[in-house]
Amino acid sequence: MKTTYEIISMIGLLVLSATFTASAQLANTAWEGVFMIPDAEKCVLNFKNDTIYLKAYDEVLSDSDFDNFIFETALYTISNDTLTMQKVSGGSPCALDAVGKYHFEINDEGLLLTAIQDPCPERIDGISQNRLKKVEY
Image (cartoon, rainbow, N blue to C red; front, side):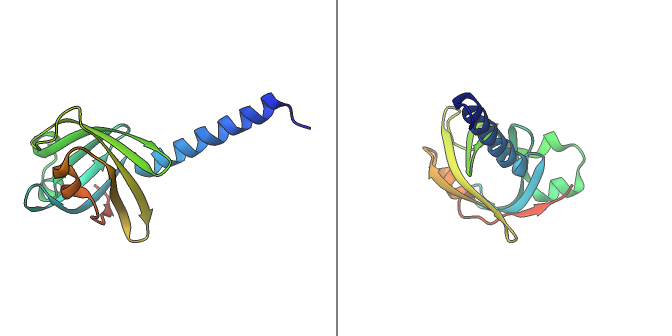
């Protein structure tokens, strides 16, 4: 029979494993799609370890100087199927302290972000319900 300590330790490891797996699904990936910023613009949403970059698609393909064509930068965390993001810099009217929470789903059709809660309507309109296709670059 397992002790309470062993059971708690096993539960803790499962939670850590689930969090790492969810984060690993998006970290160091890039997704293309059309974003309303404010007009329709083909862009790439590039996830690094804890930062998201929104960049013009044409510039991703044609320019090696990534930093010069970033529309928006945000910090992000993941818990289960929820992506939480907060703007760091960029041209959107979203406040720097505006934290958005989005449900994310990855399947054969791509990445879908659906707003759960976000005080910035422009961010919701820009990315929510937009199926993104995974790209390599």
